Length: 498
Image (cartoon, rainbow, N blue to C red):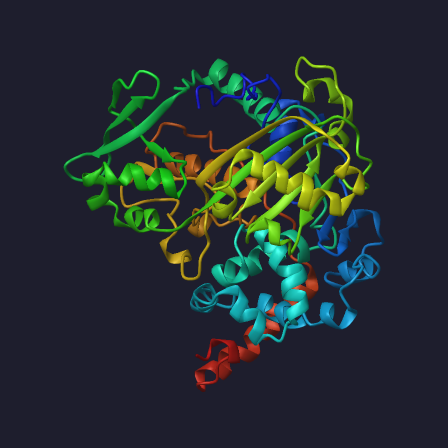
């Protein structure tokens, strides 16, 4: 990006604002909430909002603001709060998820057991646990397509359970989510954070620049230099004597970097393994309409539409989420109607379509199911952007290959939501802004703790998420008490039998 600090808003060709993906801020984001307090921008969020699931049959389910309901132990609270929220899925199908609740209690029994769950794909686990086909296809599959961005047969069962527990089952109100109420995350969070780091700590931000090679010392213990390429001019630059490097990159970036860094590849084979993992294509679209469409829910998920071509899809009514910022949504133009942000994940087939074909899919095949008025609305402006290989794929067996926080080269650490944090592991899981931010903090803290950089006394505090509820703690303890002795006798849970 020419300017990754957020000080220059990303705009369309016509000067309207655009953001790559629409990201929610969930209840259990304590460190990001603390950051907004620290920066004095805690008022950037909407209230917690209701979300809706739509299929070709119409409204399938709504997720209420669970914090508004009487609080009960999880998962009883979620069940009571959503008794009437599923419009089509029978209660017996919903109850078939019980086996998954047990597997979640078993997940952390030992590192070996976690790895066994990671080697399983989520679809196979769902079937072996007796979860009904309707619950899988009408709820779990679309949820995973927009939560981990792949269908369950392509996802690690371990990471799937971590995500479902963290976002939905840890506490009754874990699924409560809010959004940015004006502008973008870059403008509201990255810009003030960048200004603070620049003014207080002499941060230099090299926009429009690629790191192309990392050279390590002959003894492979530290970084010797980092080679950079300026995209606009194609000129090269070298940073010598770097104290440390934080690899805050995804699979695509790491793969390109390792291909040009043979010394690093030899010194840190774990990074070569991480670079071999898969990634996911994303497409983001934004539509400006000539009229306001009075849909009841600002945040929405598409489920089971043939028009999705196997992708997961969401759409957000930005004119509802950003009610006090209508003019900003339209740039220099007079506001006319609704503004819609729509994101497609696992979107290789969607990405291959033309911009107009994607817009037609939205306006003709998808949006009118949520409200017939979409059929009569005219698109007065639009923008479609593609992000190939931009998201981590948590495939079966991928956990052991994910990059570690601390690498074999002492002065290189990794940060991002796909990083294994080892002893610093945090409760925020999955493709998660909170996890990405916490991992960045822990990467810096590691360099300070090991005295690789001079920051004594300046480690950043990391806040834990809420503790597990007592019934969960008890359930895990009882399961371990029973299952460990049984396994010594050669008995295994049936889903681990081939």
